[in-house]
Image 1 (cartoon, rainbow, N blue to C red):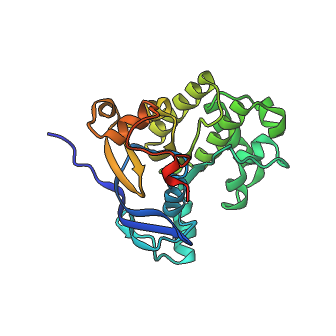
Image 2: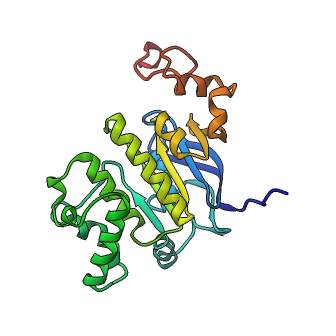
Length: 263
């Protein structure tokens, strides 16, 4: 008998536009509790916009977003702040604070949001750094003194520092070489599993998508055009998905540089 899956997020008919540009045009998506969902799609397809809508950083124009069966599109500022306390985010490009030491970056929310004693916050920060394979010595350095791959590890440690039940990853392997990408993918997978968290990752890196995701959803034309198990994506019959995952120049996805798109 299979275990009944519950929903962490339910998105229905989500629309978002900026001026004359329509970005999301009726997104429907169900994210199950405890799963790792990866949203793929090309640059400019609205992945980051969708993530910001889930975080409540930008309002939707139309539609419903439920988290734990509670509508979040109409939440108050206090409700929004309370909800964010259980969410960890690994931002694109790491987004570390240059003026803070590595351990202070990891402990930032503990100190500034939870008002934790700095000594205890540092202990937790060093524990999280160790969990991603970094030493106490690295914790005393500034972000500028460590490599890009190490900065991603620090960003991951910061995301999990508060033991959140929801994790968002924004292009976690962008700009990294294949070896460092593989390391980050495995760390993300392990951290999500250890926390028992629900994870949503946006990426155009198919190697990362396959390693991180339990399920993969593709965003194109402002909508989710395919969603299924990660192991099923190579055999799906959607021509848009096939063109994207195999990096084919020819297919139904037209590049913005095509003559037909030039005014």
